[in-house]
Amino acid sequence: GQQLNQSPQSMFIQEGEDVSMNCTSSSIFNTWLWYKQDPGEGPVLLIALYKAGELTSNGRLTAQFGITRKDSFLNISASIPSDVGIYFCAGRRDDKIIFGKGTRLHILP
Amino acid sequence: EAQVTQNPRYLITVTGKKLTVTCSQNMNHEYMSWYRQDPGLGLRQIYYSMNVEVTDKGDVPEGYKVSRKEKRNFPLILESPSPNQTSLYFCASSLREGSEQYFGPGTRLTVT
Image (cartoon, rainbow over all chains, first blue to last red; front, side):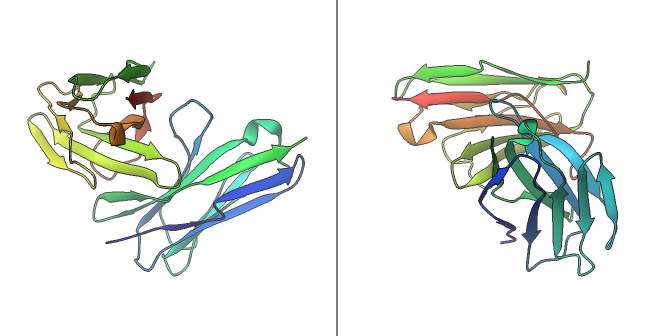
């Protein structure tokens, strides 16, 4: 079946550092989505990408839809404590959405 | 306020005791879905519903049932819970299949 490989699985960074995470697949997707799950909450949509090559920002977050349509990355600039949580990528193909396993972000004081 | 609600938020039960986790959305969404989240496994879809009276299995449906009698509600039923169903469960809804999903706050279930 289709799978998304999300990496890294977890990250420990210092406050103020930039963060980068990505999702890759052997299959082509026509939409990429990035969600964030705060501790004790459900995932919330951060950014949606609809076209290959698209680069979209949401405040300190920037995400790109890979040219090959098989990957996407999410960058967070100047991390702050409230960025802590699990970030999920999700790809849509044939009206099915598949989630990556998540990247858990830890921020050290 | 547009939202997806789940109840209960926390539940501890014993093996074999039937339980239902309710899910309701107020956005008139057609598509609703249940996921379970386990460490290292991410979100795995249990069941989904494309509209009233239309439900189908997801990736891990064994041991679960669902119903969709009304558009807004999509309860998850565990007829005979077992310890391997201890997990964090999320309900989600979207305008239609493939649209961006809105998630509920989660239900943490422990089966002893």
